[in-house]
Length: 422
Image (cartoon, rainbow, N blue to C red; front, side, top):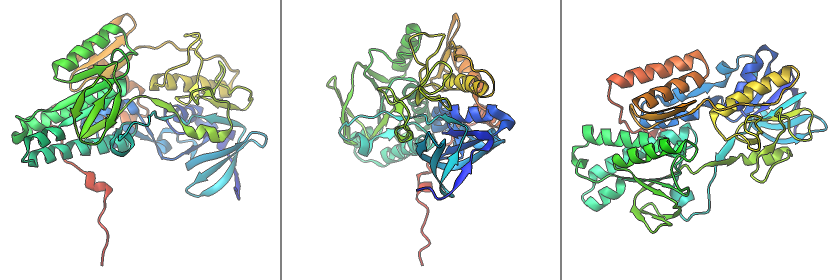
């Protein structure tokens, strides 16, 4: 039980400090807010593939919440219960467990990877949802190159260089494209004994085509471009099992590989169940046109963990993207401080990078590919990234990467510091 009580700064409690929640607190400005979040930073997830590939410093794809929201109070922890009658939330924080009283509650708990009980997935698969995943995957890739370079058996070396990515949405396609680019570049420049060893990069998705969210022509361009780079694509197929030696697919393919990356979508955070909110069949908070939670007059929800109706796309709720989360946050910040209006937003476009100098972009009436698509994708991400300080650091990283080779230092030992044994 909570043993103490505190009040939310400015009367607004924001549960979740991801893209949506952090932007609400930022836009409330000097009115203040209290943020409850497990980390003291917000991750700009569209840049994770570049962080994994070494184009960007991993610290530069996250934004410190205390800098992004200078007028907000930050508590590192999790919300574990809610009392709607008393208008309190119980939070477990680094400073203890206590009740937080609020006048307005904003729920933005986001999403977690959507997984299935596939044999071997939990034991041997790699996720790709946050900075820790990106760093771990980069280290694993470089360690796989080192392992292959040390092999005496060519078949085992090829198995080391087998990489299977499940999920052909933005996350899966961009992560595969960036990391394949890194591996090819590293082998060409620094691993002469591996130049004759086959690398096998495989993309798997249950949908009939990759990047189903974008116009078909851009999806087809991406498909052909990736195949031209030697990447195998299996659509209409699912992963049956993975034992860290071989991935078995539903279409009968058996792929020798020691690396499997799972990027097959997300689901609403299971922590939402603790807060006693109305949820739909997919576990998302049910909200109305003004983002107010159904049946409540003091609680709002947004982001990947909410089923947000959009007046510009009747009959459909927003997809889980940073672009939509930002627009939801802007509308909600206004609704919290003035007479509320319904949320409506039509997408400005969609972008994706496919490695160095290659990308795709869909803008109103225009479809770009290749270098122009890559340039527009980077421009959009720079626009959406919060704070001038982070924008400057990212631009610096991008500029340096134009003139210097990517670093291939493998730092998995950072997660295993030496003990101070006597």
